[in-house]
Image 1 (tube, rainbow, N blue to C red):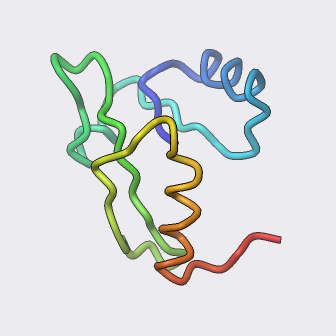
Image 2 (cartoon, helix red, strand yellow):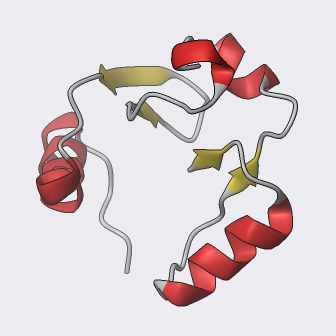
Length: 87
């Protein structure tokens, strides 16, 4: 996950939702720019999901993320792409 917020704010958010994954702080917006997801006036990022395998190969892009079903949608897409289940 990538956020334009600073590391402290990302850490606070991650703790508030008991996240067990890393949140990259992209304060200079270079990652968002590189992936083409910088939103209106550079104030936010578009909600896109990039599926990148362990070898660094981009396997799919979801540019239609629905906040209400994102978790389930990602799980289904990972399964479709043949990513191994985490144990």
